[in-house]
Length: 320
Image (cartoon, rainbow, N blue to C red):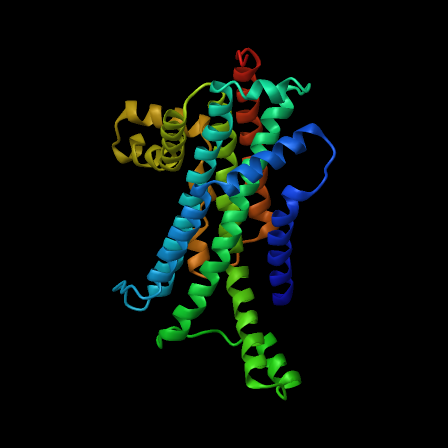
């Protein structure tokens, strides 16, 4: 089981690395490759990767003063950092890849091949989102490494005894210590990755929705305005359901605030339901079929609505 986690992660990274060099059918896939290549080659991608990695490495040695809950705090901060980095990447990439192409009239070249605007928009979305997936997966590996070393240097953190490690000792104990230590390290790395995987995937579902929104808005709005709107939607979407509860008449809340919060909670996606941080840091097993899959369907519907909205905005946009 744990070895399969490493295999899956390695396969995802390898697939995303070779994706720009593949020959794929379909014009929208060509646009997706170009958008993906542009997103991972821009300095922002590497800046976010380096800064977030540095933050995670520093967080290993930070004193959290949480009375034995340091590892949980570190996991929570790392998950939030990954989410923030991917959100910034997608919104900025959408602005650069779509807004500037339209304003600079370079989109005319692509759309005159001929290519439908639907294929152009879909390709941009897929390429930008795949760049966010690559960033999230790379940072997830970094997070798993930092969690492992935090467990190593913190005597209060009790690492679980894995059955796979015991089997490794039983059957491969004759190997040199360096080889055995590497195998043990990879098993614990896989274990940590398996624990944070639901949180990362649910974060990517949030990113997928906001990528669709950013792509849609980029057909009409500049980068800065796009960024402000997307972050506002994200914040309001996370808080709306909480405000609905806190402002309810039973709790003596303001009726006007309650009505407005209900409107936002109905229209916007409930991003707080995507947040698996508490479950991840507590080591709670999040069911993939009963929860993560349902969240994915929810995210797909909202993403489709956002892209349809973007297509409506883009259809009558003059790009010539």
